[in-house]
Image (cartoon, rainbow over all chains, first blue to last red; front, side):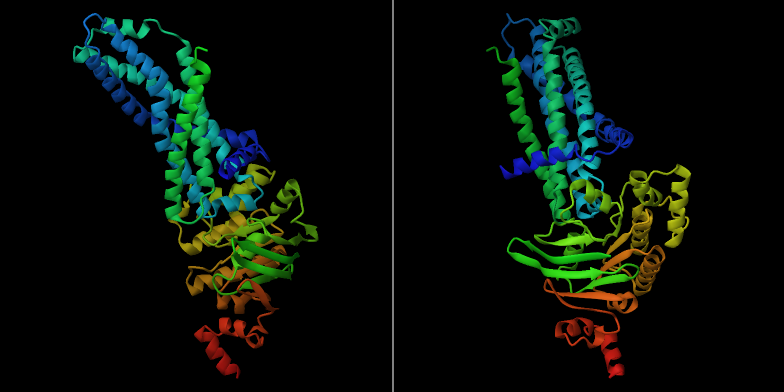
Length: 245
Length: 251
């Protein structure tokens, strides 16, 4: 409970004694490059393979002859949009970006760079953490969109190349009974997870105490806590936004 | 002038600082000395409130820093320059960007003026032409000098140096000490230096505070330190062979 309280106080400091918009603008851009552009390759790779594997496994499970083949791509679409792109990739995101944020801030802490900012009268939380959170909220939804497209493309390639289903069947399945709200839902999740990963990882890194070993421990804790928070938030959002009641 | 009154600090059950009071004068280096683990750096951090003291007050030119509100503290902190033990340079910025950082964040002046100021202080610390180097390319002494340049670029009223000589060879140590002394007198700052280096003590120790196990045991100048009559201080001072030889000669 104490830790949760400290986390919320930490979030409160994001908005006190703010630096100028101009300062934040360039910092946010830097973070966007670090978070977004540097993660694209990993996201494309992982999601393409996940999409491909989902297609093969769905086809393997749908053995009844009366189930049309386009159902395979329909299932892949629902899995991708609702869970794989926003949630599973959030775990990958926590591993790559979250650990990097935590390590970065942890190193700054143990090498007294954060103290140097504080002594200058600069709110180090506002200066260092707010741009990371804003960039994460901006970039993670974009990465989720890229991820979703790549997963569906991966499924398409494997489905067509291995002859599981015809291109027209795949496209038909992708469009069949499509509910556009699922995209909105995925983006709501993406914004939430982007915030959670950045804020939790920054919090863990910012309060690192000790030396290099503790920086590593903070990074591990940042990933673990972020993943737990993602899974909890995933359930809560599904319950709130998709529950029929 | 900085005044501290009854500063105490504990971490858990361990009492690190015990009721320390003292005054640090303007225009000359004030040294806080003592063996490792006696609370020197913690005291320095308590003064700037990087570590919040459990008890006691700090006054910057009679302004109560401890009881100041957040904005008042920020105002006072903007008058402070601090050199950290490892330099605390921002890894992702060049030497020039590091030194210009306080100006970019805190000062309102034209870009050219900022650049002139950066070049001036880099020149002052003997790092002319090192503008574009990254911190990873610098030696320990150079990092300290960049740290000093960053600390003084904004014309601070108060300068704090945490172990400025740690990890440096004796020659570079002397250069850093001289630099601190000259800058203190030229800019008329209130300077506090935390050190356990006897060369610094004998070189620039005009006003020395000796800490032992979290307590202030002695205060005075370098001329009195060798005959303080305080056993713990004698043990600290004459742990150094050069100082032992010096005592022999004096005797």
